Amino acid sequence: MFFKFFPNEYNFFDLFEKQVSCAVDAAKCFKEIAVKGLFDETAVNKMADIEHQGDDTAHTIIDQLNKTFITPFDREDIHRLVKEIDDIIDMINTIVSRMKVYKLSGVNKNLIDFGSVIEQSIASVACAVKAMRNMKNAQTVSNACVEVNRLENVGDSMRDEMLAELFEREKDPIAVIKWKEIYQDAETVLDICEDVAHVVDSILVKQA
Image (cartoon, rainbow, N blue to C red; front, side, top):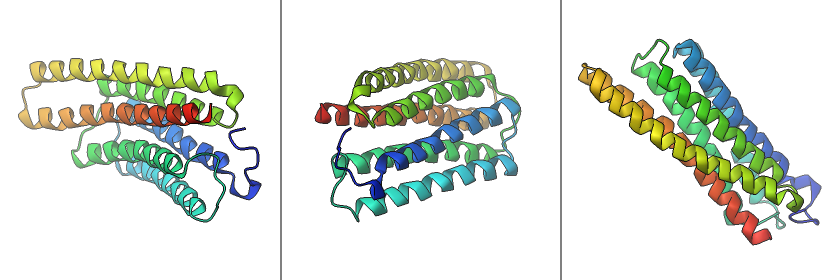
């Protein structure tokens, strides 16, 4: 264990898993919405509910962080981990809300592709976070973080290719502005996933 004397009443690992599960749910929801091509009120509300659940869990972790003396690792690292996971969920929620505001509808293959990569990346983030309970899982954590970094590079390439295609084919300048922002925000989700991986890697090194 990272800290074998960690008190049961403040099981941060359970809360980390609960928070990262909200991120997994957000990724799945985003992919489903992209596949259907319906960024309507129902989609926005569904994603908002997931975002609220994530916020509640983040607040619970910070509240317990302020109440307990013994923590499984540095308080600063706990705070950073919680913030970065929360940022993942917030950014996905922002994309869905913005799609509705921009009145963008219909199936967009590029967005579906981004949804798939985001889903894979967040699944790897969840794997890393859940494996943090035990130092025996150090290799599993490390492998998951490497995969998140790989997928972030994939996202960079996808964004550039999609923007090049957008500028070449789309004649409506307003549509270009809208989709450019959406693609960039989608890639930002992968950037934040990589930030989480860096935090987890840092924790792993300190606990080794």
